[in-house]
Length: 49
Image 1 (cartoon, rainbow, N blue to C red):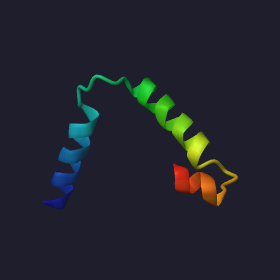
Image 2 (spheres, rainbow, N blue to C red):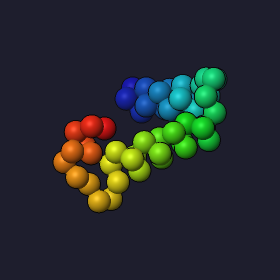
Image 3 (cartoon, helix red, strand yellow):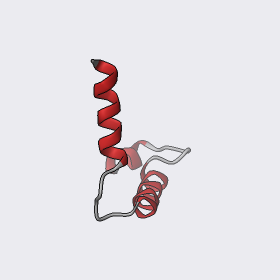
C-alpha cells in the first residue's frame, strides 16, 4: 500500500549509511542557502545559485 511504501522510503533515508555526516551535510546546505537564496534575494544571485 501507499502508506507502507512511504514508511519504507523514510526508513531507507533514516537508516542510510553514507560517508557524509548529518551535521556536515546540514552545514553545507545552510551555507549554500545563505549564499544563494537568502531572505533578501536578488535576481542575479538566484540565477548564479
